[in-house]
Amino acid sequence: MSQIQQQTLENHLEQLKKCTACPNMIGPVITPTPVISKVYLCGQAPGPREGSFGRPFAWTAGKTLFKWFETIGLNEEQFRAVAYIGAVCRCFPGKTKQGGDRVPSTLEVSTCASWMSREFQLMKPELIVPVGRLAIEQFLPIAPLNEIIGKKFQVEAFGQQCDVIPLPHPSGASTWFKREPGITLLAEALTLLGSHPAWAEIVNSAGS
Image 1 (tube, rainbow, N blue to C red):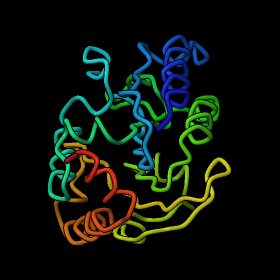
Image 2: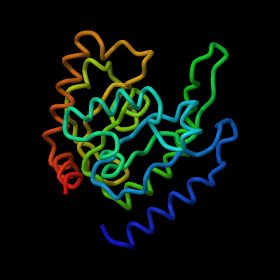
Image 3: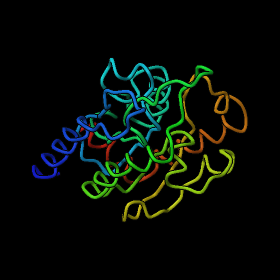
């Protein structure tokens, strides 16, 4: 990592924090630790609690996600220090009338993708870990989770050749990863992650 790369990323995140492009999104813009990394975690969008903490995956879904990662060598503090955490959308979309989190619109997703594109151009990640269906569908064709979790894919994303290892969303409202075949497929996905060279690299850097 060069000082120029680091400064460029920090400037990028400062610009991102000021974004007001989507009027129906609820701020603040949530940004991660400015880490140049070959591993790019892509979440869906912040939940209602992330704004008060000012960082992605700061509530219950994050606790589950980081428990998964701890089984393959990185606890939460270590992961945040060595991997980049992006998202399909960087602001909370708000609630639906039924009380669930609103799914971002196609326009909101495409607008926010410009920020992800800049991050890919800067970091040139080798491994993308999309978490949840909305994130997965930014990189892979739409398919049931049973057909894509537990597998590795090679894709071109924002002009970069990358491996993609998708994960289910760790939401407490989801039961998919708590019953078969989700239990087995999640375990297979984590095994693939743990054995990937880019993951091994960040585990080693966390321990050095």
